[in-house]
Length: 586
Image 1: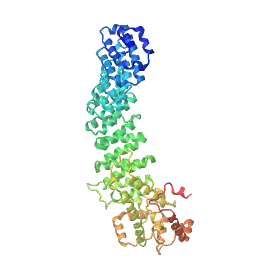
Image 2: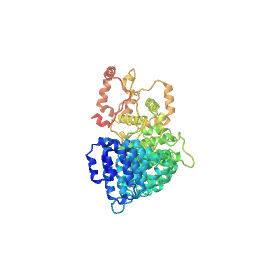
Image 3: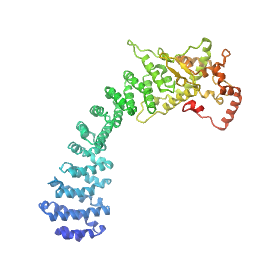
Image 4: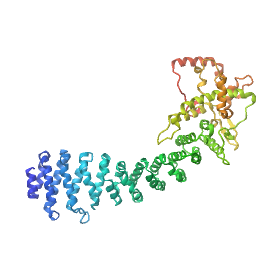
């Protein structure tokens, strides 16, 4: 030990203690461990608490030692001696004797604590310090306990497993009022869940007494606990979470926890759906999360699917565009799982229009049409589309050409379905996950609808007298068939396929599509394919379309140009149109 340390500590010479700061750190670094052991002997003497000279000498020496350790970064070398002195403080009184007046040993403990625990990112030091640190949590010194909690929170970030063995002590300290340690629990829960689960009800009861940051840490704990899929945790926390949903500061976090629970225990939320509906009406920005919970409950069985779908469908027509995709995915996932709810028209309803309001109306009427009546459900062959979809019937003379057109349309849709309806696309969607196939399916639907609705005609139909623009009418068409590069000859885009067997198969496999989609095609589309038959004559609307007449007169030049361009630019695998067709034409 350095001779100056030996003189100051051996003789307890306060007059020479200040000279220690004149020494270079490297000069006394090798003497620090021995000096700490000598300080431990002095502070453990029976008269230390009453001897002011000894207390002053010890305080000065500890300050010089901790400064040298910090400057020379030799904490690991002297950690054992520091922790030994720190541990010896626990043998003495640490409770303040007066207002804001620490005891002599509490002062030593505080100085050593800051020196040791500032090195929370050094596992060897923490392995020695944490078993001693947690003992200070129950020694009655609030200031010491508060500072200790801050350091332990930092230690939990880098080395939570060291704290896991002391979870029970930490939980009891929280319940005694040291709520700052709540931030430690999410980190140690993975290692030691049982001590926390045993006191979970008591921890939840603290919610109203906590500050907002501490409330957030308690909710983080519940989120971590929900991921472990433990039924006893679900039973305790679901009613608690539902009860705090009206708190706008935390309802977003709470719904994320409920989504996690719904993923493995959807029935636990079944009885709280009315409350969730009320929350979505009160806080519209939460509709996406509420929809996912409804979707999870709707996958339990068909009865719950039918009870959840009306809410999802009703929101489809009301919510902002940012939530439409989530709502459509949840609705489609449920109806794909229980195909009897919508019958064979399920896929086509989602494709029929780029208007979400129109889709919502179709789904609502279809759900009404397929409700079980008198203990008997309609079979898929009995399910029909709403009357609002029905337009004037095609004449018998036009029926054959009409069926041929629909075969071409349906063939393309079947191709899309075979590519998009993979087994993975029917499954549940977790938070943030969206099926690539579903995105393509919905995007194609909207694009082909826009491509067809180029003429702003009006359709006055339906039993409620609404006037709907043709832009909202259901329609489907194969855009690729209009490309002469895919035809190989001068076939009209809507000319019938020569394969008779394909015509028969398509007509039988989709008996409802021919009747419905053709009646709602825009007038210009009907006129185009009707011109292929000798019985039909051009309509006045066709004569007014200057672009159509020009392209018709120069069709051979257009085809030749397309072939030439096709040699230079590869044909895209998929082409979509985004935005309104009117703005595109302008």
